[in-house]
Amino acid sequence: MPGGRLTNEDRQHIAAGLNEGLGYTEIGQRIGRPASTIMREVARNGGPDGYRADRAQEATRQRARRHKQAQPPALPVLDSGHGRDPKVVHEFTESFTALLEQQGLPRMMARVLACLLITDSGTLTAADLVQRLRISPASVSHAVTFLEQQGMLRRERSPGGRRERYVIDDEIWLRSTLAALQMNDALVAASRQATEILGAATPAGARFESSAEFLDLVSESLRGVMEQWRQSLAARSAGGR
Figure 1 (spheres, rainbow, N blue to C red):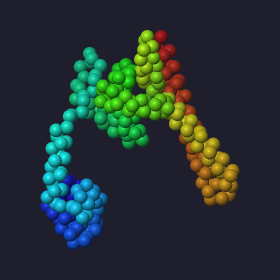
Figure 2: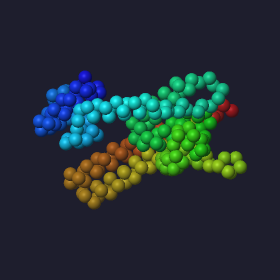
Figure 3: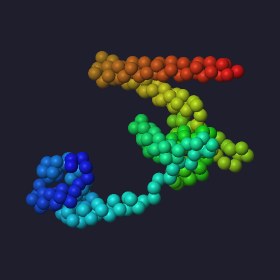
């Protein structure tokens, strides 16, 4: 079935096509598959000269068997006392991590951020993250450094000052937006400089001038949103007194 897994019959057709000297596109057309699928199948099973349908089929069975025997991912360690279903929380954490990746975060950084976000305290140590995510201390350090640079968490010392811990709070997206605003302002300044250097009357200069105008509007909007949010927080604080 197009889009599904390759069958043994598909692999027989691939082997026959290679023997005939056909290209990946032609072979793919025969079995209703994209050329990229044929290319990957052949590349990981001996290449054009070494591809054998029976060996490729057996290799696929072995990979599937190893995948089934692999250790299942750890469910998140949850804060106690709330009656949460670990499986449901795990599924949400995975989907939220994927969403963060779609927004541009590298996977390891997305996993660390999601892990922090699902904790009620919003605080974890490096050892906590290593245990919960089953990753190395070096991976934690790299991810935390990146997220800190983006304004998405901060470091602080635990009581007694023995351990460093990583903290997120209700202003995580405010700080992240501020970091984005600073980058946007830098792009505005660079675009205006390019307009002066290239000349506003030239196609390249006009392109940069238009970019600067648009990015300036983005910065103005971001500042307005941030101010509105600060006012909302202040109003909540005043109302809670």
